[in-house]
Image 1 (cartoon, helix red, strand yellow):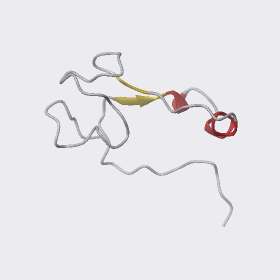
Image 2 (cartoon, rainbow, N blue to C red):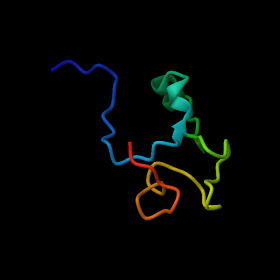
Image 3 (tube, one colour):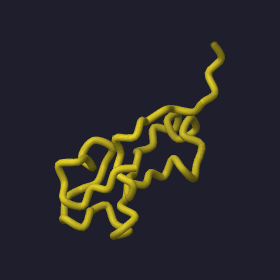
Amino acid sequence: MEETGFRVIGNDRCENLRWKGIFIDPDQEASSGGDHIFWCLKTQLVLGPDGKLVDQYGCNAARSCYKTL
């Protein structure tokens, strides 16, 4: 099976979580050793409304600000 370059992340992500990979080529970013920066759509910061850092694992149903996809 040929890979398309898309990754399935499932529906267990917060609706407000954003990642710069939406706007750039993630393969190019990975090859340059860049970091993967996340931010919250509600706050426009790396901190969510609850004051905690946002990332692909931390933004889950255990947080009061979590909104399922």
